[in-house]
Image 1 (cartoon, rainbow, N blue to C red):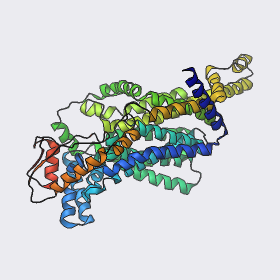
Image 2: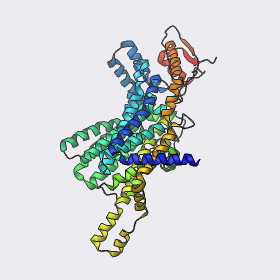
Image 3: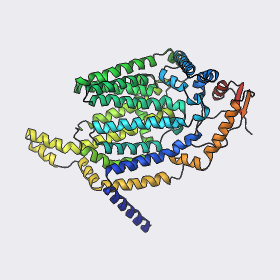
Image 4: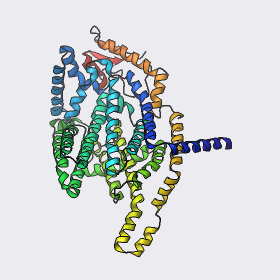
Length: 528
């Protein structure tokens, strides 16, 4: 045991020395490679992805139009007509419904592999752009260090994603939430960049982008749309107080987004759907109060040992970033409270509408907002402690207060912690990275982390078997001579593909969706 511990310490010391000698650019490159390697199994597993669940319900009109005419124009017309019908009779999310009806598999069944590329590509890139922008512009970090933090954060997120299938592989569910959240992240980054723009032409260009994206977000899911309304209101307030010359670049996107949001929430279909829905939501006040409770519950749930290791790993990097920053970190309590309120607000729409939380496809985007907020708030607090001494000394010098000067000479707990990070930072990062890799690769349950689970399903043949059987089903579906469809259950399925399958009951809503899509008398599972 002692021998093993000595080897571990030797390895830790070697890693610490290596990290000391590595420039941040190279560390950022390695972080990018780690993220890329972790995403390869997820994208590779997408090769065996298939159409499922609401993809059939929302795509039936488009599929019929495409099969009848082979015209993209006619397919788009069918998508818009179905979208308007949904708006009048089912739900007001006019942008999401339009995009959901345009499932790529409506045009060619075997292109479901493109879905994870779209969803990971959009969500990862938008999160990276927004997070890097906040770190660089608002917290004063350099570009390279900001990129390093965001690459590590994305690696973390995609390993512990709450519902991988619903956030990566399922077109309908991921479009409604992950894709719309991606659009909002890009929109928020555009508005914020307009606030920092020096040239009027660039400011106008970014404002134009934000206007378009705000309308799209307003017509998407209500969780993201409400989040956008809150953030835009705060940015309008910030511009009004701090820099009125920039007020227009926040007000215009806020107005257009709010108009889109009103069209969404006031849709006739929302009222009709509410009258048919047996689930009863809470009152507005109760829903808001319960949102804070549920935020605390999910924060605890999502703060796993894996997350804590990544957080500790990044502490030295964040400390160096904010210590070199020339920004003022004067309001850590307000920043923390605002982040908690924003995160809690994302639980409110489902509590108000149906009286529940825990919808996996919704939790995916809330989880990312939590992790993004966690690291940004941590950086802000570190910045507060890193510059607190300078602030106090400057105040004492200006006011000639000996008492305050004496107080300024003492080290606070935050400053002591900062000195600890400076002294042991690289070794701490190396140790945490070592444990992180061991935890990631050597986990007992190979389905704990998404990349390991995906690789397992590829290697043991589950993915191939599942896809072969799915294509056999599809051949039966498109056979016009078969009207009464009876199919076998899947004999194997990747753990990440955890969607509900068809049942033995032909009247089940999933069975009905497939039978209507392919115009069959019925479709049902037959157990051997």
